[in-house]
Image (cartoon, rainbow, N blue to C red; front, side, top):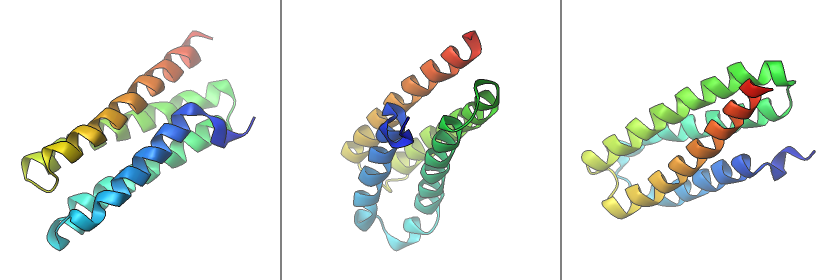
Length: 116
């Protein structure tokens, strides 16, 4: 199996690319604080998904749960960026849709991993 063909990885990859395109619209002050933190979290999520795809079923669950926690941090930080006006409402909605989609896919993967 090619780990790059995993739908959740593709979605998270697209999330990062979208996030990256918004970077130039963010003030320097915010770019080196909350923006950089969110960027790191998205990269951690990608890394975790890729790691989990390579592991046996019993080893996947702890990694997927860590990814889920990171995704929750990302949700909070993206909302915070909207509230402090680092990003506008339109960008917030676009990012949040992708974060929610990754969350649904991750929830399904965690559930199926637990049930086996």
